[in-house]
Length: 316
Image (cartoon, rainbow, N blue to C red; front, side, top):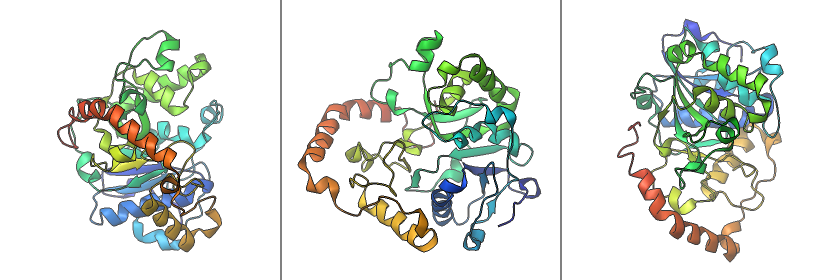
């Protein structure tokens, strides 16, 4: 598939995935889900990368926008630890797509779409702020928990978002110089770059972001499955080492593993890794006991958190 130029398109909003060739199959799984859930969608799906992407012709019906490969000396110099360098690309996405779109939604590629609704989410009130996001799971059950990046920097308590889902107002992002601030911090304080882009964006925004309901970035669904099934989560986020396509212990829900298995078998059989369709949790009582105990211990805290968002499009 040849790169296409977003500026030529009439749509003013886009979902953005930042990937390399290795992670492309999983990004295309997510793009395919978006296409199937919202066939009449009024947003584009953009794939941003630092190298040309080899996209099978089958995916031309999804209407993908693929800008020219991105290059930046500042990007190449950023600290890399446990995440791929491509994680930083989301910080540049508003600059790459400026002029083509007014708002974008960035999604990590290890997400699973349960229910659509992104078209309406683009329109929520962001109170003039550059970014809207969901609290990181660290502060779901302990809302006053201090985060390491802010503690080390001497800024004290701040709300801290997970950067796997970002609703970005491009004009506000550019005028607030979010990228420039993040890069200054990366150079001056590399010790603060604990979670790559997530650390830098939280530090650069310093609380100047709008909070979204957790249903848009439901984190660790395999660890808290009893919550996941009853909270109306719209997008599941499998961050960490266990992925639906690489789950040797059988922790992810079987229906999700089957979805990936079918997709990869058809389009990318070489990308299949250590997945299993064994009923891992059911065969071992210990994980089930821990799940039940977590549910009972955290239930009231989670209810308090969810009560702040009477509907999925409420913002704070």
